Amino acid sequence: MTFSDLGLIAPLLRAVEESGYSEPTPIQTAAIPRLLEGRDLLGCAQTGTGKTAAFALPMLQLLARHNRRAGQRSARALILTPTRELAIQIHESFKTYGKYLKFRYAVIFGGVGQGPQVQALAGGVDVLVATPGRLLDLIDQKLLHLRDLEIFVLDEADRMLDMGFIHDVRKVIAMLPARRHNLFFSATMPPDIQRLADSILTDPARVEVAPVSSTAELIAQSVMYVDRNNKKNLLRHVLQDKALKRVIVFTRTKRGANQVSEVLASNGVSSEAIHGNKSQSARQRALENFRVGRIRVLVATDIAARGIDIDGITHVINFEVPNVAESYVHRIGRTARAGADGIAISFCDAEERAFIRDIEKLIKQEIPVQRDQPYHSTEVETARVMSSGKAKAAIEKNQNRPRRPRNRNRNPNRNRTNR
Ligand code: AMP
Image (cartoon, rainbow, N blue to C red; front, side):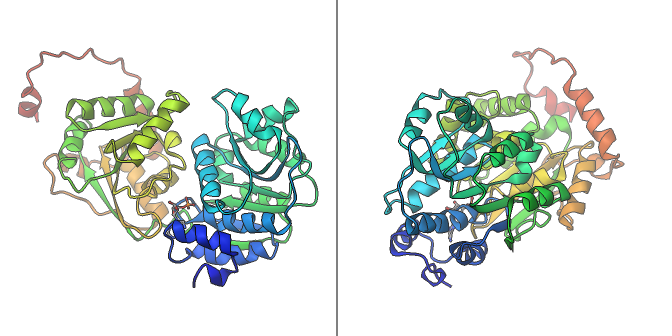
C-alpha cells in the first residue's frame, strides 16, 4: 500500500515523500479513503500511530476540492485539542503536509498574549488548531466565529474529559453549523466518550488501532525494584549507559521533576524539566532543546508530557510508577513511535508495587524484572503488595512531609555504608 493508492493528490504526495514516509501507517490506510469520501470518522487511536497525518492529509485535500476563501475572522476547518503542545504540533504538521497548497493555517492557545493570534485570524484561515479555552475567549470577544466551518475535528476526546474541558467542548459544538464534516479521536472509548461521539457524528466510519490497553510490541519493558532512597543513584547508574541517547524521565509531581533535574545537573547530565509551573516559553525551549539533541534527558510530569511528539526517544524511565495504569501506556508510548523500537524502565519502590500490579492487569502482560543492577532490592520485590488506595495514601503522606534542609558538607560515603 502506498500513499498514492489512497487517492491523495500530487501536492500532498510530494509533501509526504519529503517527510520521508515510505508507506502509510494502519490508521492512515483505514481513515484516509473514508474521509476523502466525505464520511464522518470515529478514530480510536492514540498519538504515535500516525493519527495526525491520517486526518490532516484528507482534510487538506477536501479543502482544496471545495476551494473557497475563508471570510474575515472565520475558519474553514477547526481542530480542537486539549493541550498547547499538541496544538502546536498539529499546526506544524498541517504546515508540513500542506506546504504545496496555498492555505492559511493558525494555532491558538492560552497562556500567551492574544495579539498575534487575533492578527492571524483577522483575514480568515483555512485551518485553525485550538485549545478550547482560548477559542471560546476569542469567540466571546467577536474576534472569531465558527458559522462557516466545514470540517470539525475533536482530538483526544478522552483527555479533554480528563482535563475538565467537557463544558467548553459542548459550547464549541453548539456554535457549529449543522451541516459539517466531523472527525472524532480518542485513545479510549468509555461510555461517556461514546455518548459524546454519538452526539457529534453522523453514521461514522469506525477506525481502531492499538487500543490503549495494549502496549506496543516494539517497546521492551522492564521493572527495577529499588528502595525509594536509592532511586536517584539508580538513575545515575542507568544513565551511564550511552545507549540511552534521548530519554524522558517521568515523575509524579512537579517538585519531583525539579529534584531529578537538579540531581542530573550535578552529575553532568544535560537535562531540563517541564511541568505546569513553567512558562509556556520555557517549556517550548526545553522541548526544542530536547528535539535537536542539545539535552539528553527531559524530565516531565504526565500532564506536561501529553502529546509530546518527538521522534527518536530511545528510553522512557518511570522514576515513579504512575498511580493510574493508563498513564503508564501513554508514558511509554512516547518511545517506539511509527515503527521504531524503544525501551521502557520503571523504578518501583515498595509502595508502588500496587501500581505495577494494576498496570500488568491493564496491559495483560507481566513486566519482566531487571535484577541485574546494583540497587536491586529483594525486600521491595518480596514486599506485600498493598491495595492501590493504601499505596496512594502512603505516598501522599510521604510527599507532604516537610523537606529536610540539605547538608552540603555531608560525607558522600555515608549513604553507601548505610546501604
Ligand atoms: P502522530 O500519531 O500523528 O503523533 O504521529 C507520530 C509520528 O509518526 C510523527 O512523528 C509522524 O511524523 C510520524 N509518521 C506519521 N505518519 C508516518 C508514516 N506513514 N511513516 C512514518 N512516520 C510517520
